[in-house]
Image (tube, rainbow, N blue to C red; front, side, top):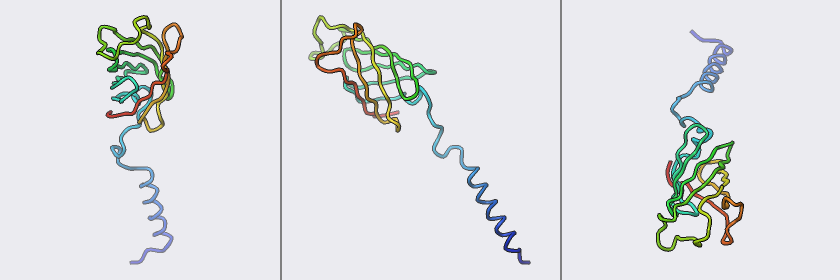
Length: 141
């Protein structure tokens, strides 16, 4: 029994349509959104920095002087406050003894989630004379 060409074409088109609509749900995983995109470890301007995410909030710890940060995500941006503990500074890490130990930051995550760039400043709004850039490259999720 031979099927008409139109029936074969219809079956072929149906198969293609089903293939385009279906697929393995696990292929590629879920797309991360919001704060989840920030979760992981980065090598940053201030040493290793690890972010944890919950909802739209992100907390983090970085190597320099026992640093901690917390912020809120909006799109690809993370903004918030940082804080350091002078007692946790290792030799060579100590800033000027009169320097502030808290401030604000603003970061922007790359579209592939592999790095961030941004800036920081002291709570008074003053920028450090040595620079205020803060960048990082992801080392693990």
